[in-house]
Length: 48
Image (cartoon, rainbow, N blue to C red; front, side):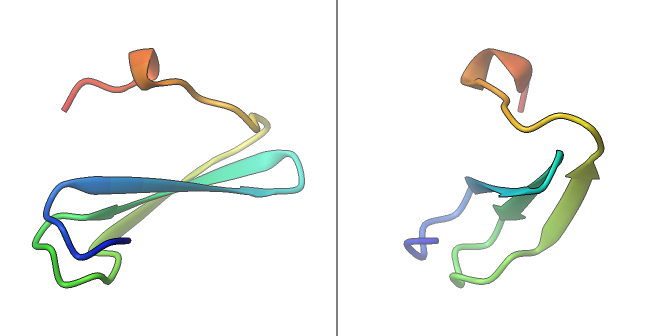
C-alpha cells in the first residue's frame, strides 16, 4: 500500500487470490478476502 485510503491489493497464492484493502490510509490491510480457485480479477470485478 502507498498509505492512501481506499487502496486494494491482490496476491496470488497457488490457485487462490487474496484481496486486501487499506480503508483508512495507514498503509496496513484493514481487511482481506481469500478467493478460492481463481488467480486473476480485473477492475470490472469490483464495485466499491
